[in-house]
Image (tube, rainbow, N blue to C red; front, side):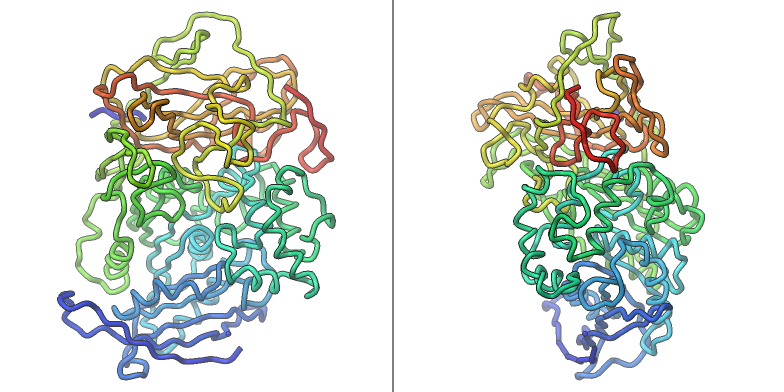
Length: 616
């Protein structure tokens, strides 16, 4: 097939037994847990750390062991799950709260201190009597970014990493996306870093963040008001309960105001592509999903650039997953089949046994890239109510694929989408009102909480989605331009970067242009209206169309080129010609992704100024 595109230490002994017949020759180790060990950073700040040690008969086992480290803002107590897997197999597990979070001292500044703090922690680990001098790292999302910060800092003893859906390159994609601010970070801050699971961490986070203990209930309540704050943007310093959590307010206000891609973003701590030269040359297993919020920078930036510049093995796996969904077979409203879920602990164990223990297990001889190609299913409704999309795994020797054909599809005046170049025609127009932005329905989302839905989703509004005004398909809105292909007459696979080029004009000096690729399924018994399933999307804030580093306003009425060349979404999906009336659809609008992105207001107002809205 051809492709397109704690301050006192507490020690606890636990015994973990493997099931009979596991095939392991040696007895599994017991787990000796030392809670709340304080590691001192170079500036004197204490970083609270849990250490899980291999044990025999209730005491620490003799010998030296490799260490697996996770540095997290999400409460180190949550590391029990992976530590209980690795320690019986002969690893030490170390989990640490990052600076300013939970039990650790200092002020929270996302990733800015994680290079130095991680370096000091790695050095401390290497000095311990149980350490054999080798460290591997784990962690998803923010803890993925702390891994990158370690590598950029060239931390000692660091030998291998597995960053999953890792924060990185924030000024290009993930916090700022081609100039637009991703509103999931409003949810992250208002929930004080508990975006999807308030639970027992909510009060602890509020207590740690509060400058005044009396303000803790107010800080906790913010998590129930995310919708209201999103509707009432922008936020101004001192006007919300965030004034009692100054670290969080300071960061959010600056991140929302700071549009230019400069040292603020490049030196935040985990911008991989801006620090390739400093990045330690070690084996890294990059893990992400097509529907993850960090999928594009992981696959298109981190893996590509490190594979190009480093001698050590770089490995990439991209599944059909949403954020952290490696053990699930579905993403949003789409079911991809049982093979889509992987044994993630087994994957990590194999990697670390090779690079930390020297096992000759062949992991270094496998193809460097493994991707899941979505599609091929019959679109029936599963017992869980999802549409069966299906798919399969495929191993590759490179990414992106050199054999892929960059195939242009053109938008035509009559609403068609085809490979035929259009003739000269009058422009297609629409009006965008920033007071009525097009809702976000799924997509590459994380830290979503009550603000957003994530993953594959039928692009029809529904009553339970707070930003929807009705139950129409998004394609029926007058402020969404739809271009649709004819029924596909041959099998088609789209694997690689999705690039959109527009020639556009606006009556406003600034606006957003967004594009979305949709796989249109025809009606069937289970879905009588068919399904319009989102594959990928992107946005460009017009003032950053020429450069992310410097804003240039549009001249009203004058055409400009809009191109999402800085980071494009990735996709791996296929359609079959045997599916009757199957189409590809491209949807274009000004801000069709509220509340994924903070909307452009259509004016020349600077990013940090009081807003002036206008219809464009």
